[in-house]
Length: 101
Image (cartoon, rainbow, N blue to C red; front, side):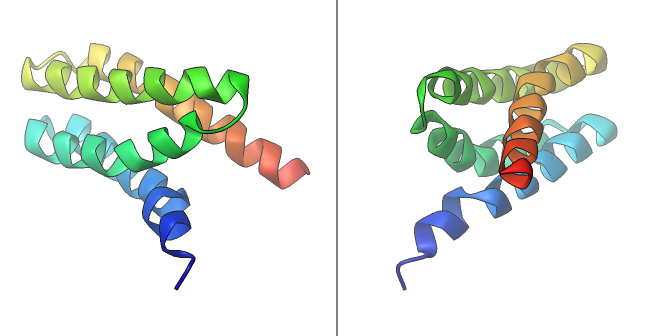
């Protein structure tokens, strides 16, 4: 089974991480958001192995996801949402790019 890295670190990891991060923010539960950040870590690392622009966005998205969990823990919902934007924007742009090619 040679497809396990794509399944573990690819789109399922990104979607699952986004769902848990958004649920953690909506529920104001840092543990749920932390699960989302942990799930999305593989996707962010996978993004970081791409060409230059995405090489920068992978670690930035991972760091912003971790900071979003910290913001949820401190009940700063608006900051948590703002910190989630680099991850969601990078994922959305990557999905758009793949769809258009």
